[in-house]
Amino acid sequence: MEFTEVIKNRSSVRSFRLDPVPDEVLSRILEAARAAPSANNFQPWKFILVREEEKKRQIAELCMGQSFVGEAPVVIVACGLPTPSRVGGYTSSTLVDVAIAVEHLVLAAENEGLGTCWIGAFDNRRLKRLLRIPEEVQVVAVIPVGYPLKEKRWKTPRKKMEEIISFEQYEE
Image (cartoon, rainbow, N blue to C red; front, side):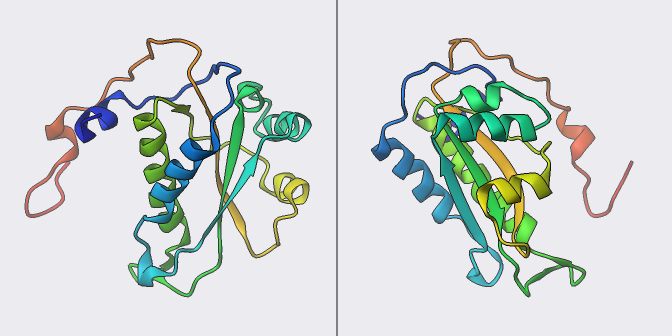
Protein backbone atom coordinates (compact mmCIF):
# COMPACT_ATOMS: atom_id res chain seq x y z
CA MET A 1 0.00 0.00 0.00
CA GLU A 2 1.21 3.53 -0.76
CA PHE A 3 2.52 5.12 2.48
CA THR A 4 0.20 8.14 2.39
CA GLU A 5 -2.72 5.75 1.93
CA VAL A 6 -1.61 3.77 4.98
CA ILE A 7 -1.65 6.99 7.01
CA LYS A 8 -5.03 8.12 5.67
CA ASN A 9 -6.67 4.68 6.02
CA ARG A 10 -5.55 4.05 9.61
CA SER A 11 -8.34 4.32 12.12
CA SER A 12 -9.14 2.87 15.51
CA VAL A 13 -10.70 -0.59 15.25
CA ARG A 14 -12.90 -1.85 18.07
CA SER A 15 -14.20 -5.13 16.63
CA PHE A 16 -12.05 -7.95 15.37
CA ARG A 17 -12.44 -11.21 13.49
CA LEU A 18 -11.39 -14.33 15.36
CA ASP A 19 -8.71 -15.17 12.76
CA PRO A 20 -5.29 -15.47 14.36
CA VAL A 21 -2.54 -13.07 13.30
CA PRO A 22 0.25 -15.12 11.67
CA ASP A 23 3.62 -14.97 13.40
CA GLU A 24 5.34 -13.65 10.26
CA VAL A 25 2.88 -10.73 10.12
CA LEU A 26 3.44 -9.96 13.81
CA SER A 27 7.17 -10.12 13.16
CA ARG A 28 6.92 -7.50 10.42
CA ILE A 29 4.93 -5.05 12.52
CA LEU A 30 7.26 -5.54 15.49
CA GLU A 31 10.24 -5.00 13.19
CA ALA A 32 8.69 -1.65 12.23
CA ALA A 33 8.50 -0.72 15.92
CA ARG A 34 12.08 -1.87 16.45
CA ALA A 35 13.23 0.41 13.60
CA ALA A 36 11.77 3.51 15.26
CA PRO A 37 14.13 6.34 16.20
CA SER A 38 14.72 7.23 19.84
CA ALA A 39 16.70 9.80 21.79
CA ASN A 40 20.37 8.78 21.92
CA ASN A 41 19.23 5.52 20.27
CA PHE A 42 18.38 4.15 23.73
CA GLN A 43 15.35 2.27 22.32
CA PRO A 44 13.67 2.38 25.74
CA TRP A 45 10.84 -0.01 24.92
CA LYS A 46 9.65 -3.50 25.60
CA PHE A 47 6.57 -5.00 23.93
CA ILE A 48 4.60 -7.74 25.68
CA LEU A 49 2.51 -9.87 23.31
CA VAL A 50 -0.51 -11.46 24.95
CA ARG A 51 -2.54 -14.18 23.22
CA GLU A 52 -3.85 -16.12 26.21
CA GLU A 53 -7.63 -15.64 26.38
CA GLU A 54 -7.96 -15.23 30.15
CA LYS A 55 -5.07 -12.79 30.35
CA LYS A 56 -6.51 -10.73 27.46
CA ARG A 57 -9.85 -10.62 29.29
CA GLN A 58 -8.13 -9.39 32.44
CA ILE A 59 -6.25 -6.73 30.44
CA ALA A 60 -9.57 -5.57 28.96
CA GLU A 61 -10.98 -5.20 32.49
CA LEU A 62 -7.95 -3.12 33.45
CA CYS A 63 -8.53 -0.97 30.35
CA MET A 64 -11.61 0.50 32.03
CA GLY A 65 -13.75 -2.45 30.98
CA GLN A 66 -13.26 -1.97 27.23
CA SER A 67 -14.15 -5.58 26.39
CA PHE A 68 -13.14 -5.31 22.71
CA VAL A 69 -9.50 -5.14 23.86
CA GLY A 70 -9.70 -8.75 25.03
CA GLU A 71 -11.50 -9.86 21.87
CA ALA A 72 -8.53 -9.10 19.62
CA PRO A 73 -6.36 -12.11 18.74
CA VAL A 74 -3.29 -10.31 20.12
CA VAL A 75 -2.89 -7.56 22.69
CA ILE A 76 0.42 -5.73 22.67
CA VAL A 77 1.40 -3.89 25.84
CA ALA A 78 4.00 -1.23 25.09
CA CYS A 79 6.30 -0.46 28.00
CA GLY A 80 8.78 2.37 28.51
CA LEU A 81 12.11 1.75 30.19
CA PRO A 82 13.81 4.43 32.28
CA THR A 83 16.30 6.57 30.37
CA PRO A 84 18.50 9.56 31.23
CA SER A 85 17.61 11.19 27.90
CA ARG A 86 15.60 14.42 28.10
CA VAL A 87 13.20 16.23 25.80
CA GLY A 88 13.64 19.99 25.98
CA GLY A 89 15.88 19.53 28.97
CA TYR A 90 12.94 19.02 31.31
CA THR A 91 11.34 15.59 30.85
CA SER A 92 12.35 12.03 30.06
CA SER A 93 12.26 11.05 26.40
CA THR A 94 10.77 7.64 27.24
CA LEU A 95 7.11 8.45 26.52
CA VAL A 96 7.97 10.18 23.25
CA ASP A 97 10.29 7.38 22.17
CA VAL A 98 7.78 4.63 22.93
CA ALA A 99 4.99 6.63 21.26
CA ILE A 100 7.06 6.85 18.06
CA ALA A 101 7.68 3.09 18.14
CA VAL A 102 4.00 2.37 18.75
CA GLU A 103 2.99 4.59 15.85
CA HIS A 104 5.43 2.70 13.60
CA LEU A 105 3.77 -0.52 14.79
CA VAL A 106 0.24 0.81 14.22
CA LEU A 107 1.04 2.00 10.68
CA ALA A 108 2.79 -1.27 9.83
CA ALA A 109 -0.29 -3.15 11.11
CA GLU A 110 -2.51 -1.05 8.84
CA ASN A 111 -0.26 -1.88 5.92
CA GLU A 112 -0.73 -5.60 6.71
CA GLY A 113 -4.53 -5.26 6.71
CA LEU A 114 -4.72 -5.40 10.49
CA GLY A 115 -6.71 -3.13 12.76
CA THR A 116 -5.46 -1.59 15.99
CA CYS A 117 -6.66 0.81 18.65
CA TRP A 118 -4.32 2.86 20.81
CA ILE A 119 -5.57 2.41 24.38
CA GLY A 120 -4.36 4.91 26.95
CA ALA A 121 -7.07 4.32 29.54
CA PHE A 122 -5.76 1.58 31.82
CA ASP A 123 -4.94 0.89 35.44
CA ASN A 124 -1.14 1.11 35.30
CA ARG A 125 -0.50 -0.34 38.75
CA ARG A 126 -2.75 -3.40 38.33
CA LEU A 127 -1.65 -4.01 34.73
CA LYS A 128 1.97 -3.98 35.86
CA ARG A 129 1.15 -6.50 38.57
CA LEU A 130 -0.72 -8.78 36.13
CA LEU A 131 2.12 -8.82 33.60
CA ARG A 132 4.96 -8.76 36.18
CA ILE A 133 6.30 -5.47 34.87
CA PRO A 134 9.04 -4.02 37.11
CA GLU A 135 8.23 -0.92 39.16
CA GLU A 136 10.61 1.37 37.22
CA VAL A 137 9.01 0.41 33.87
CA GLN A 138 5.86 2.23 32.77
CA VAL A 139 3.03 1.00 30.57
CA VAL A 140 2.65 3.54 27.78
CA ALA A 141 -0.09 1.96 25.66
CA VAL A 142 -2.19 -1.15 25.18
CA ILE A 143 -2.76 -2.07 21.54
CA PRO A 144 -5.30 -4.73 20.54
CA VAL A 145 -4.33 -6.15 17.13
CA GLY A 146 -6.38 -8.21 14.70
CA TYR A 147 -8.22 -8.30 11.42
CA PRO A 148 -11.11 -5.81 11.44
CA LEU A 149 -14.57 -7.35 11.66
CA LYS A 150 -16.03 -4.63 9.44
CA GLU A 151 -14.57 -3.54 6.13
CA LYS A 152 -15.61 0.11 6.38
CA ARG A 153 -14.05 2.05 9.21
CA TRP A 154 -15.26 5.26 10.74
CA LYS A 155 -13.06 8.20 9.80
CA THR A 156 -12.79 10.94 12.38
CA PRO A 157 -12.68 14.50 11.07
CA ARG A 158 -9.35 16.29 11.09
CA LYS A 159 -8.71 19.96 11.79
CA LYS A 160 -8.00 22.23 8.85
CA MET A 161 -4.32 22.77 8.08
CA GLU A 162 -4.49 26.48 8.99
CA GLU A 163 -5.69 25.48 12.48
CA ILE A 164 -2.57 23.46 13.23
CA ILE A 165 0.24 25.33 11.44
CA SER A 166 1.95 28.61 12.38
CA PHE A 167 4.84 30.24 10.55
CA GLU A 168 7.86 31.77 12.26
CA GLN A 169 6.14 31.98 15.70
CA TYR A 170 3.25 30.60 17.67
CA GLU A 171 -0.08 32.11 16.64
CA GLU A 172 -3.57 31.47 17.92
